[in-house]
Image (cartoon, rainbow, N blue to C red; front, side, top):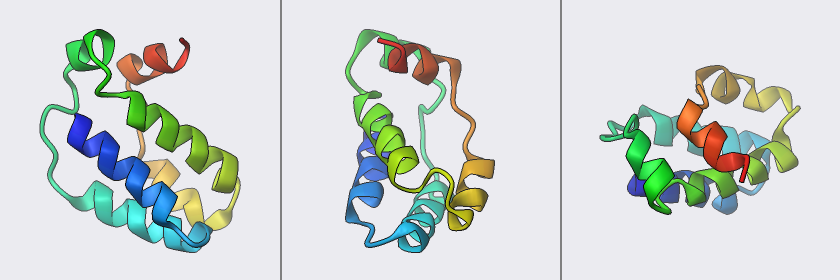
Length: 87
């Protein structure tokens, strides 16, 4: 989980514009990731914090940009991530 979230945030931060961000995030989502559904990792550790930051930055910078639509359609924000984000 932490590796995925760090990579997600890195893709958001490295992007030069919304189209570049969409491309980077699509590539990141295409990789095989393990332990993405481990609720305890989000609730009992800080593993999900980079996801929280990355998602917030992604939505702030490009949330309504048409280039982001394919990425947003692929993302399913887990219950654990939503709970962590409400802190």
